[in-house]
Length: 334
Ligand code: AHM
Ligand code: MG
Image (cartoon, rainbow, N blue to C red; front, side, top):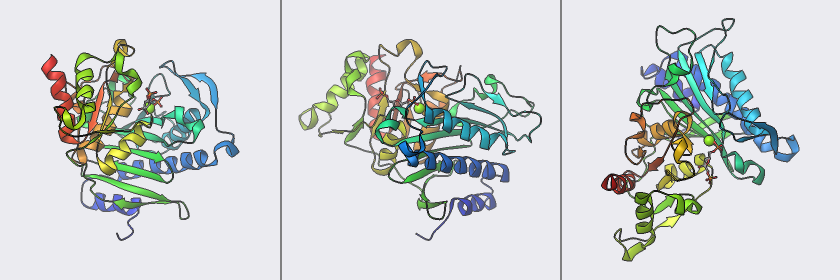
């Protein structure tokens, strides 16, 4: 493939009338912040960035030093960017409007600055997930309520995976594309255009240690997967679980599969484990743009009307036909 940098791709999208200059520059700012996070992660123990920060976030989770650092990097880069009206993050209790003193734009940015952070200290892939919404026209200082738009209104979503190589996977609603960071020249270069997730799969990703806590339809669905060739699904399934959503989704983007974090009796009161606004929705947009599907098990993910910034949902996403199977088990039960 001829070398197409992220910058060139975005300019081409602007010329084609698919994004405007503000969204292009906003994506560039996020990508630059992700490069900075990638450098900090790459230094590992030498950079003094491993371990706990000694603080907690609104979700009651202990923060890692890299959670806090990545959040600060994204905040700092974007507050000054001039393309946003407000930001919200997994690590912040509430959204933040862009202060009056800064130049303000028309977009809202949500992010999980460092997803899979339990993996940081063991040198396994982690990532950043982000979602871009439009700020309602009449709003100058957006509050949390202005972020509560369904996923189908997203104008852009992406994730960066910090693994053996750093990759950015992006959609602006016209296909899903993969860029790899060329560390020598410091640019993201397109390495896959228009990714297509295979419709069928023989691979599933779930935290099996939660099996006894799942609802009945999930028990039955995975039970049938495990019966293999002799069972109702008629094929042997393989299982993979990285415990970094970004890495698990990236495997699915690369070779298909189904990722699920279902409801279980431990997370039932909260509505699920993963967060709708900055984990499930951006991943759903990316996966749908690659021909896959994303659901709560009972409803298309991007049609869920959000009720809270940190709302949690059950998640099933990946190969279209396999997600349809998981949904079928849930709907049959209702
Ligand atoms: P985080 O955003 O606090 O890192 O939590 C989300 C992570 C996902 O990346 C991953 O799929 C899941 O939590 C792992 O859960 P478990 O610890 O049950 O394996
Ligand atoms: Mg996360």
